[in-house]
Image (tube, rainbow, N blue to C red; front, side, top):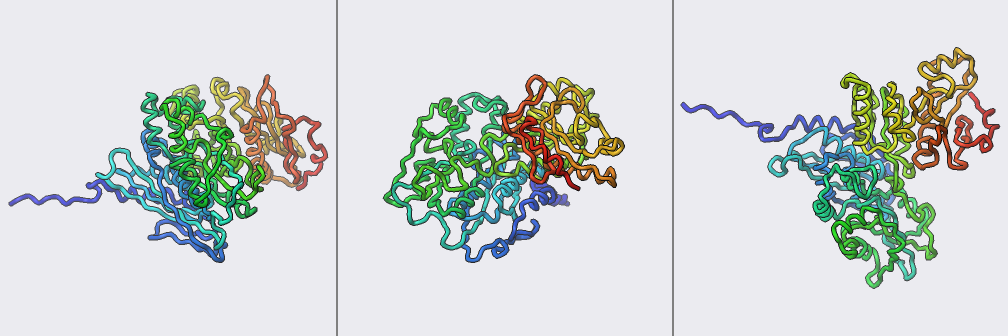
Length: 568
């Protein structure tokens, strides 16, 4: 009698259904964070729902676009950096919608891989969710396909599908383009997601590894610099289109560059005249041209060369429509956003305030990583849900404080960090680490320094009978809570205050102050010089609601009367 052949399973064929389900659970918080009017459902059903009426449309025309990321994926795969590629996926789709005057409403993704890694998948979807938040559209669903034999090793592929809408009669281009209309170029964040097959050829010729320092971007690896996410222009362009009616046409500069994309929005008998000398070309394009010996004509047709949008406003004077500006800093933020790593030990409420601030279009910094000495810190889960890379580095895993700080330093550099923000990080740092980041590391302390350094600040303030308490953002130096002050916020101490009530009032001030102070640092308006804080002239402010007093200017620049306006 022959032996019975053992039955096969789907898992033995290389498909892990449980891993797919685990990934779905991990990404649910990321998806929830993209909710908007019209899209309130959970993922997990067989289709995503969207209510056009709830979104505020009366007579909408639907506009759809789909796209991928191209071979930029190869750099993400080979370098192991997956947290931003999803932004590119969203950008390539929603930017195609907005050039037609449509507001992106919802997005779906398709993620195919040889072997599903839930952590990698969550990082990718985290980037997609971040892109959706920037664009103001909802991530309402997607598909994950584990396909052994179709893909090999760590390979994966992405595709995106976006749907938007515009009120009937408001689509672009308009039919009144005339000779003499002005063309405006809107800055790109770099390569965006085109021409990467040529980019990779140039990198091969250069002999550089992905983790080598980028020749054109100080402080970044080659992979980091080349993976700079595609700028999302949605919100600012929609404001300009709806608010001024001055935009007649928009062209998305992708594959084909200026020569192929601009004519797509012009009447048949029209041509465009472009003064290339007015374009500030980012260094990455110069490096590619020189290293690859690429002709100017090839550069112009393959890459955006620093311009991600060409707009044709009705205004024939050399100025942009109101709300657009000559150089639109896109929804991904200013061209040179500082990369910030936040260190926490617990809930990370101040970290959350920084994350919220960094989501604003014009904020000069982005949160690129969160580090904690406590693997159980709830702030890590919050950051991960926002699509931000996180790393737990328990002190117990290292033989010394020095080794611990070295690991923290390496992690910060791995994130590409330029500024470090301590947000409830409860360990003292070594002098070596502090000196390494001097002038680029700040802390927020729950007291009006130099009063009440150290712990238990609210109890000590109550015991001392002070009438004003608050918080301080300061540069970190070797001494505990001893660095030069950047900004302070004061709150009243009320007669019936408890420690808990006072803490809550101070914390509210902290959440407003820390983003302000980080903005000053990221914009270069504050620095350490000879052990003291130096400010760019007249950057100080007093909040109109008199609950915030910033010491970011000389006393003569401060409205001292505001100090008397603190109210319960």
